[in-house]
Amino acid sequence: MHGDADVGRPLRRGPVAVDGGLSTQLTRMGQDVSGSLWTGRVLLHDPGAVTKAHAAFIAAGADIVITASYQVSRAGFRSAGLTEADADSALVASVTAARAATGASDRPVRLAASVGPYGAILHDGSEYRGNYGLTHRQLVDFHRARIDVLLAQAPDLLAIETIPDAREAEALMQVLDDAGGPPSWVTFSAVDGGHVCAGQSIEECAAIVAGSSAVIATGVNCTDPAFVAELLGRLAAATDLPLVAYPNAGGDWDPTSGEWHGDSLDDGTWEFSSAVLEEWRAAGAVAIGGCCGTDERTIRQVSGWLARPGS
Image (tube, rainbow, N blue to C red; front, side, top):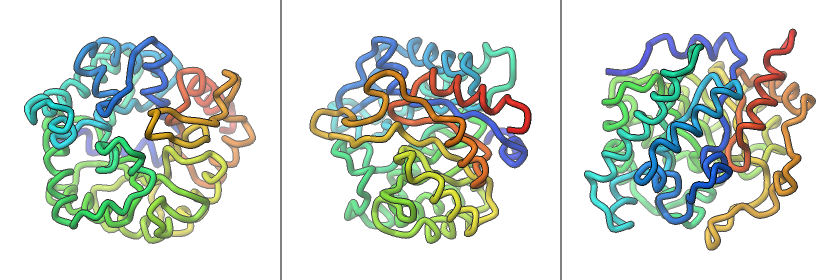
């Protein structure tokens, strides 16, 4: 069973607020997200903390929350000395934790099940490079296993996110089509204003996802905010799908330390300015949030701007 077939309608009406960086929010709440399992580590040891993080984003005005399943996979859990059953249980727990928060809200909040790229399980920054050297079939098999488990939990939609490579997008589209077209958005990680991290153009990626009846929106996430307006403009010219933007706070990911360096949240004062938000909205974004380096403060600022007359 899939989520609400009309889940794409709010995106077409827009604008709505997406949540912020779950790992950042959990860290600010005192949780340890180090190691290869990342937020999946908190799912295993303190799922209630994940619910509290989702609830913080909802209280800040998020209309869509994204589960802690980004880093969870059977292969990744095996590499960490756990079992495939542990991975499947963590995928289920990610939806359960988010649903506890959305169910307690006094307004409708959509639940998006996160599907991160293959590179995320390598914990070496590969999600910002792509070009894994895997075959199409290997990528299909990897993603199908986790997507099947997530869909059994009936999320409202799948948030297929931080995809760095057009070839991985092609594999994911096959999985979605084979699964009967569950409503999904697909967002890419980009290296500049026109190309995803593996080097293909954002227009090529837009054409790939537009070919699937499952895809209800596309866009960019965990990308430097400086590139977002141009990327959205290129996407708007290439597809009529609603556009989603939830960039990171800038800076560079260091896979050795497992930390971001040089992001503009370092001094605790960073925010998406109204001018930047207006630029993204003008470029076509109907759903706006944040990724790594952003927390509930960012989403409160975004949702407040979206609530202004004329936004």
